Length: 257
Image (cartoon, rainbow, N blue to C red; front, side, top):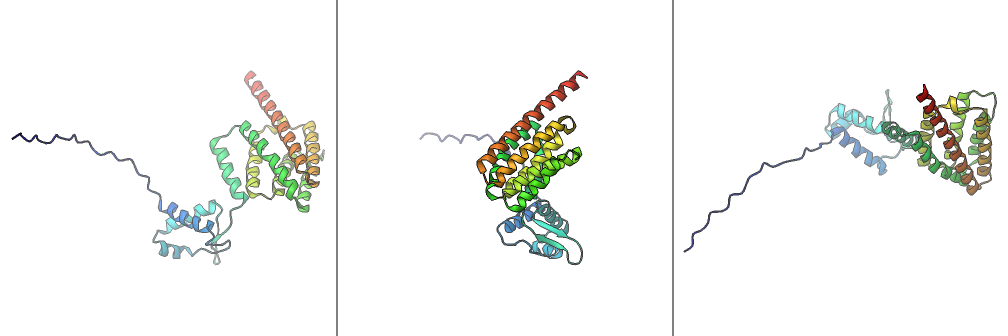
């Protein structure tokens, strides 16, 4: 008989486990409520259960419940009111929620001015096209009101800049697309905050801006989508080129100093 060989010894290695990310209880509760709101289980205006009742239902601590509601408030899904008739009330997310998120992205990533200008050149002509298709009489009034300030030679620089932003946002709102309006709100404010407006805006820029806006507004009024898109594309491209030239010139002057 042949001898039976003993089993080969198996080398033993310690088991390696990866760290596990355990979600916070407040995130879990906020995620559950968010999904139910977005699915329409809680229509806008619905009052969520009082804080004490949420604590009893979820068996989570009061601090956890408050933090979850705060998350939803920041995301624009609930409005929290204080007082005897207060509480957390469901609301629909709108363009302001989009603008807030985009603003955080722009500031958090510290995006370059050229990135913002390129994004604007891509988006805003589409906004003008939609404005020409869907504008109302109220939209036209908003465009004309903003442009009247832009064309006023006695308006201050702050008045001009504020009216300029108002006009561009009025174009976006005239398209009645909440997503684009949110993008343009964040984008316009970031661009003007990043631009050396004192060095850039002079009488010639004001005049050119006023003429361009009047031309685009006329196309929107006439519901000429192609012309509105073409004129807006030319306007924002010319603006981007001028801003970049000023920024480069400023950097050179600073380097000389």
